Image 1 (tube, helix red, strand yellow):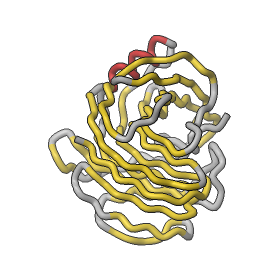
Image 2 (tube, rainbow, N blue to C red):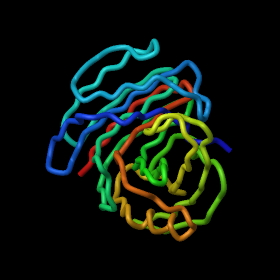
Image 3 (cartoon, rainbow, N blue to C red):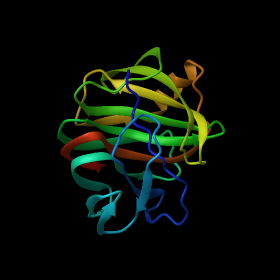
Length: 222
């Protein structure tokens, strides 16, 4: 089974505060290979700009609460809008996702510390959903059923540098392009299986693409 490709997402200071309690963060990573756990160069973007990253061209136009992305033969990238720190809030979103080749996801994505955990609530995906680790059961939330997995990353890049940490995954069995994510339902479901989060770090409604696919996405957080 395949894990969501892990990208180093280093802790950064001075994120741009757009609205009370809302922080925008775009994180871009690209590499010539997209193997689970492989370290990749990462760039945090908080302004309109174009440039290159590991030989790939990118262009970002940053409005509040929404973003559009297009990629072609990308090794790996993540882009999102959200909060720092995250919370058990309910998130409403709408999105479009069109891609060919590789793997692409639209997820609520975030980190916690003490314990160090990387988590995904996958709402939409192209092709077969990525799964990894141990199947822990299911949770029903917001009109959908989600499969729960726990997967350990050993000596991989994290927001605290190279570390061993857990990935918590909740993968919707029937993907949707819009809806509501009752975040507390997933935190509680993970906890019921002993998958506990610590102090919440950033949390974004993210598009992720890897394994040299091409496509586009548009995401609005309501």
